[in-house]
Amino acid sequence: MTKSKVLVTGGGSGIGRAACRLFEANGSAVAVLDRNLPENGQIRLTADVSDEGQMTAAFDRLATEWGSIDTVVANAGINGVWCPIAEMTSEEWHTTMRVNLFGTFLTSRLSLPLLKDGGSIVIVASINGSRTFSNAGATAYATSKAGQVAFAKMLALELAPRRIRVNVVCPGAIQTNIAQNMSVRNTEGIKHPRVYPAGEVPLTGGGPGTAESVAEAIYFLASPAASHITGTEMYVDGGESLVF
Image (tube, rainbow, N blue to C red; front, side, top):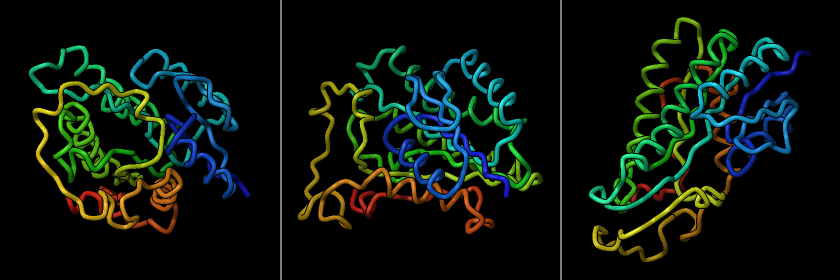
């Protein structure tokens, strides 16, 4: 039986790594793409998703070694800089957009010649920009994530004749290391007061979710169990965005 072939960007850590492990545990062959050389995956690709040259080279190698893929998980992203918009530099804005939005575009566009008809693209966005707008200073991040959701809906219609499904997972607070790619400054003055009697995540009594819980959603959307689901965002946040 032929193994399903899965590409995961940002697969070296956090949600991406959890997704890789889940796909592999269920018999898929996994290609992992990350800025730093990932330790996992049958094929390991080093590339910055915002660099077209690096991404083209990575996909050329994938085409040579595999020829085709069944599933693409566009997970790579950064939190970027969170600050008042009046203080944000153009470069800070563009960096977030290049990685989160342009990176998703590049991943999707370059995968299309390899992606089998009937395949699947799953984009990892966020509750920010789609259902939550109260995180002070997250304007660039939220805008990039909202753009990913709109991009997925447009692509879902465009690729429907090929029976390629395109969906989005929108995590809330999740235990990952994405905060290492984040800078916060001077947000106290633009915050709106919020009070949560039992923490910000109702389902867990306040604590964040796990990368594995998001990986389960990604795996479901890529599986035959979701064969009639496309252009849809799935919130994996324990109800967090419902109380914002």
